[in-house]
Length: 157
Image 1 (cartoon, one colour):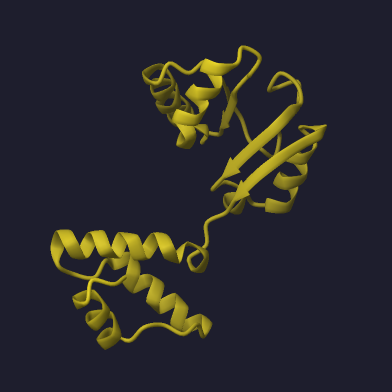
Image 2 (cartoon, rainbow, N blue to C red):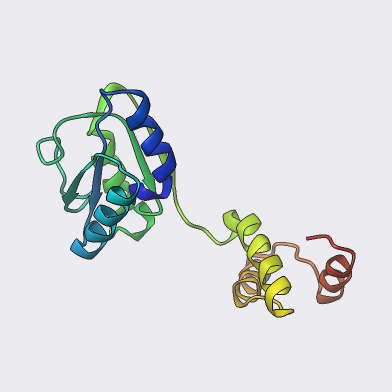
């Protein structure tokens, strides 16, 4: 939800009075958590419960200059319909930032997690093992265990 960028949102609120922030989520539990974080970071925002697939400009107070949709579309029963719905909520000059999760596209994150796991527990993370399995199934070249061990010993990731 919108709180991934809490610092940036707070900065927008501090430097301009005409920014309106609206968060949309399907679940009441997520909205309650978001409200707690908004209060902690002193961010003014309107939270709306609803689905991207059904939301209208009337539901969220009008059209947007910018929509950030991170980690949501791929969970919808019809991601393309969700994208069309979001696009309909943009002003004519509006823009949208999109991010969908994908194992291969997030390798840098998994490598960082693997490094942290190695530093903390001395072992290879479960996420990295799953990632390697998916890479192998997709035919993507991966490091061998020996290469991983050698690069880890050399301080490389």
